[in-house]
Amino acid sequence: MDAIVPLKDDHQAVEKIFCPAARAAVPDTADHVLESVEEHRGEEEKEWFPQVRSVLGRNRLGELGEQLGAARPAAPRDPLRVRSARA
Image 1 (spheres, rainbow, N blue to C red):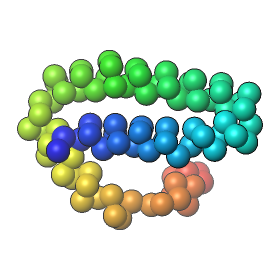
Image 2: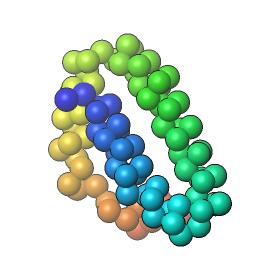
Image 3: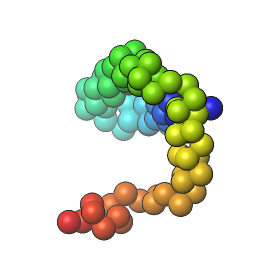
């Protein structure tokens, strides 16, 4: 699996979990935020990801995907608890 697949999975998870709850809680604000998220997602998936694949190639992306998968269990769950976030 290349490194881009988990990123697309993350996009789908955000859309599935966040979107319905946000729209129900604060519809007007949520619509604006979700529109921005969709724009960001589309830009990454249609422009950035293909460029990264063409530059790095599938083999290197596969290696990066393996490294990301191995590092994920040790990654902080709360990014605000990372020392650099408090600096």
